[in-house]
Image 1 (cartoon, rainbow, N blue to C red):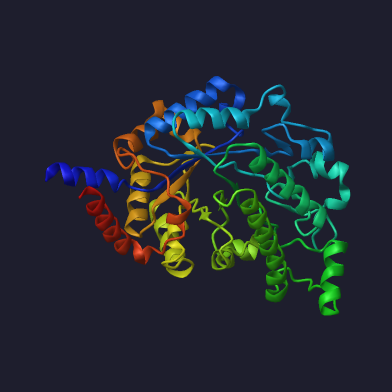
Image 2: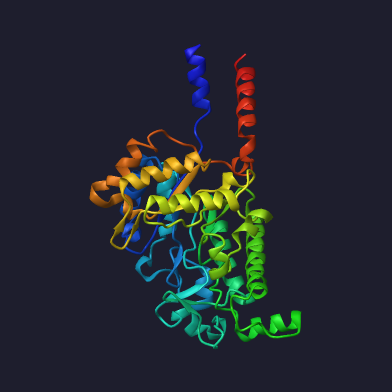
Length: 393
C-alpha cells in the first residue's frame, strides 16, 4: 500500500512557475557560452524550471535578426557579433531541463537617455510625442509611437522571427510591451485617427478617462493580434506578459491587463510587484488577487518579485515570506528579477531556495493547466485519482 501511495504522490508532482529573468544590464551571463552554461546549471540545481532571457534591449537583439538588419542595418548586439546568445541559452537550458521564454524587454522604448537613439535617428517618423509635441520621455526612456502601424509591424516581426526560428516555449512582453506612457499619443498620426473617429481633437489632459481608454484599447488590439500570430506559428507557445500593476499600469502606461485577461490574450502574467518590504508586497498581492483575478485566471498568475536593483538586495526572510504568501493565496509560482541577485554573497539566495521552497522539483504547468479554473483543482485531483487506480488495476 505504501508503494502505491508513493507512486501516486510521485505522479501528482507539484506544478509551479519558478522563473528568473536574465539581463544584459549589470550581468555578464551573455558574454560567453561558458557563462550561460554555468547559469543554467545553477538555476536547475536551485529548482527553477523556466528562464526568461532578454532578446531585445538598447535597440539591439541578442540573436541575429533579419528584421533589424533589413530595417536598421544592425544584425545583433555588437558585443555578440559572430555568436547567437539566444541559441546558446536554449541549448544549455534544454540540457538541464529548463523552459525558455524570450523576453522583449525594451518593447516600444527606443532608447535610454539617448534622445531616441539609433532607432529614431533613422526613423524620426516613428517617434512618440507628448502634448507639447516633444519626443515622449518618461523615467529616462524615450519612446517609439506604439500606435504607428509600422512600429507595431516592426515589433511583431521581431517576435515572429524568434518563434519561427528557435525552439522556444513562448515569448514575453513587459512594462514596455505593449505599453506607452499615457503622456503620449499626441503625434500627428494618432491625433488624426482620433479626430476621424470622434470629430474633435484629443483632450489636452492626458489622464482624461475616455482618451486614456481609447489609447489603451489600441494596445490591447495589438496584443490580440500578436497573440493570434504567435498561436498560428504554434498553438502550444505561451504568450507571457509582465506588466505594471493594474490599474496604475493603465493610468500611467496604457496597459489594460484586466481586459487582456478577460479576452484570453495572455497565457501567463507576471505583474511587477517590485516592493522592497514584505508588507508592501503582501498588500499588492491581496489587491490584485481579489480585484483583478478570478478562479478562471488565477492559474495564469506568477508575480514578478524584485530581488536585486542597484544596491538593493532582498532579504532571505522577505523572499521566503513572499513565496509562502503566494501559495497561501493560491498563486502557483513567481518570477525573480533578476538572476544576479541569486549569485550575491556566494549564491546565498539560491541556497535559500534550494534548501527551502524549491527543494522539491516542480513541473512547469502545461497550457491546459494554465487554462484550468482554480476552483476545479479539487475536481481535477479526484479525476487523477480515478485515472491512477484505473490504470493500476
